[in-house]
Length: 87
Image 1 (cartoon, one colour):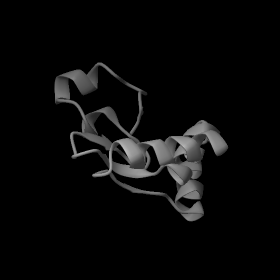
Image 2: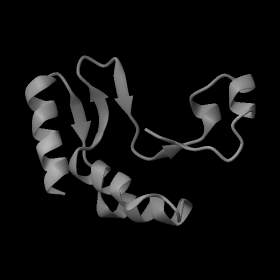
Image 3: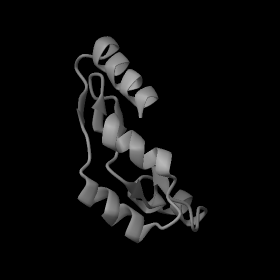
């Protein structure tokens, strides 16, 4: 988590307009139950760095995995079966 703590500090320094919120251990459990193969380092990232807008809001980090149809148009999403994006 030390590397993520350094990253979180750098983000706050370089992008002070960021609005990032860390996730709770309960949210981690919910994600793990829904997606048993979710990488542990992704969950650590969300716990230490967080989710929300980066900088002035042009880039968003989600608070969990999302299905393609939550991000892409229907045609593109249909071409990505079984794919989940880590926001």
